[in-house]
Image 1 (cartoon, rainbow, N blue to C red):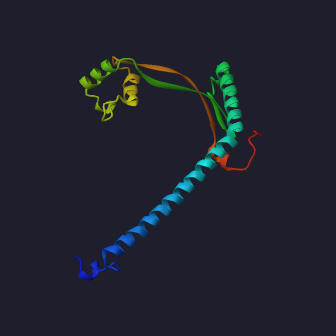
Image 2: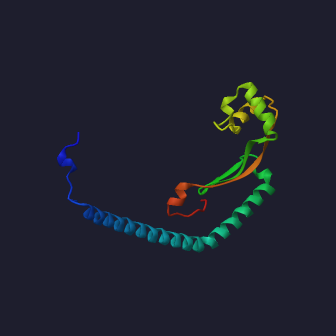
Image 3: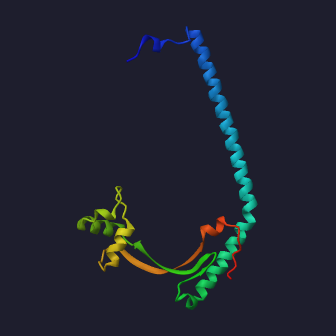
Length: 170
């Protein structure tokens, strides 16, 4: 319940209300200017960081490509174990299966007819994990097929990134 005292204000007339609104606008503008200046500084710092990190990123890309090429050309080394573990992390091969949709219409018709509601998002996009489960179980679903192959895995341990230590096996 509002009381009359709750509605009292130090603004006594329209001129004072306009003046108060003007002050509000000035503060809003000051905040907007500060935010814009801050965002500009952040953008400048981000650009500078990206530029500064470019040599390391380029070298990292080269090293990852070299290691990936080695792994793919020396598959016999990665038969057992599939991944080589070091104090820094692991690298090697990992078998992955993914659903490749070859005919959306056939797939939709089949999934609808079979009542596979869990294979769709609310926008009726096929959900590959649910379809993959059925394909893995041996079910044939027209409009898609299961494909598999090896993918390179290179994973640096997060703990290593936080610690100040060497990445040399002992």
